Image 1 (cartoon, rainbow, N blue to C red):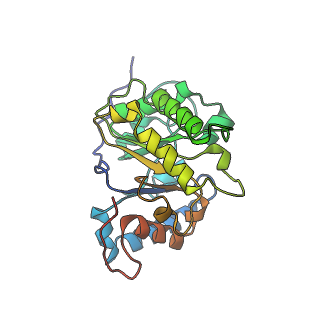
Image 2 (cartoon, one colour):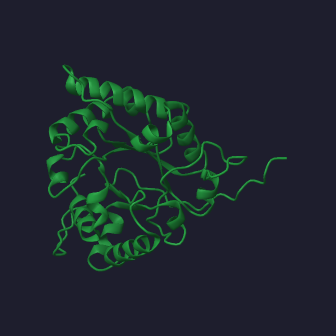
Image 3 (cartoon, rainbow, N blue to C red):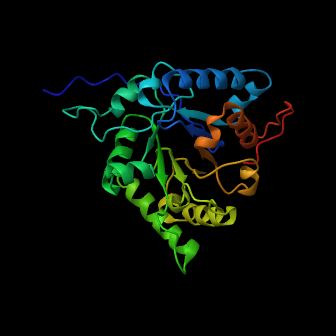
Length: 274
C-alpha cells in the first residue's frame, strides 16, 4: 500500500532573474558552528540597511542535513536528496519530506557526489525530477572534469551543455532551475579558472538550445573559487555565485552578498548590475 501523500509545502520560490548567492558548508562545520554561522548571517542580512537585500537578491545557506531543520529559515537549502519519494531506501532523504518542511532549493549533482558516490548522469536526472515534482528548485552542479586540450572553451562548453541536457531530461521547461558551473579540474588547483574562461563557457551554455528553449527561469551561477572582486571580473555574465570555503567566514560571505546585490558595505544603495 503506498504511503499517504504529503501535504504540499508552502514554498517561497526564488524570483525571476534576480542575482543568486549561496554557500555550502559541506561537512566542515559542527552543528554548533552551523547554528552560530546561520544566526550571524540572519542578524546582518535582516538589519538596516541590508534589509533592502530582500528585494534585490536570493541568499541561501546549504548546511548538512542534521543541521538543516534546527537552523531552518527562509534561507536554508538542502545539500542533496533521494531519487525516490518513499520506500525502502535506508539513509536517504526524500525530496517530498524536504518539500513538506518548507525547503525551496535542493543541490543536485555536485562533483563530489559523482566522484565519491558514483552518481551518474541518470542519477542526477532522477534527483532533479524528484526536486521539481515536489515543488522545489534544483541547484544543478555541472562542469567539465578535465581541462580540454586544443579546443579549450569549446570543448568545455560542449561537455557542460551535454551535462545540462542530461540533467534536465524530462523536466518541464516551465519550471525554474539554477545551474551552478564549476570546472572540476580547477577544484583545489593552485590557480582557479580564469574569469574570461568562465564567462565564455557560461555564454555558450546560455546560448545552447537546451537553455534557450526553456520558458521557465534558468539562472546560471559560478560555483568555483571565490575572492574579492570576483563578481566584477565575471562582468555580469553569470546570475550569481555558489560559494565554498572562502564564504565559511560570515564576514566574507556578507561582503560577497553585498557585492552581488549591489549594496555598498557602508550602507549606500546602488542598483544591482543584472
